[in-house]
Length: 120
View 1 (tube, rainbow, N blue to C red):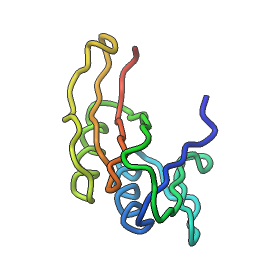
View 2 (cartoon, rainbow, N blue to C red; view 1 turned 180 degrees about the horizontal axis):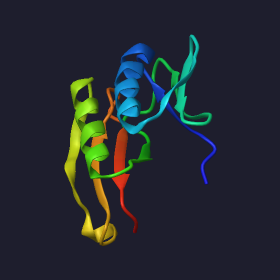
View 3 (tube, rainbow, N blue to C red; view 1 turned 60 degrees about the vertical axis):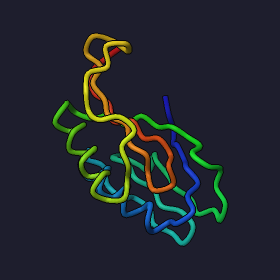
């Protein structure tokens, strides 16, 4: 189980714009905003970004649960429209299980974000 996950980002507001759109499509909301950190969640803050002048390049991966294929596609589209780049379009991933469906984004700092539904 995960208490929280955090990424270091070089531009807090640019990354916040990206994650606001992605999390909105998944049903989560911004739960904390500060000068050096922002967090999102449903019942409490579970995903954080913090401002760092020189974060490690392309470090990190997080898988975000989606309610279904439509939510995966919506979050992928939201991320692409808000500064993200594709690292794998929405599709079935049979290598991970018969019902596994996901998409991969890179956030504005090139951190990998997986949007997933289905079980392994």
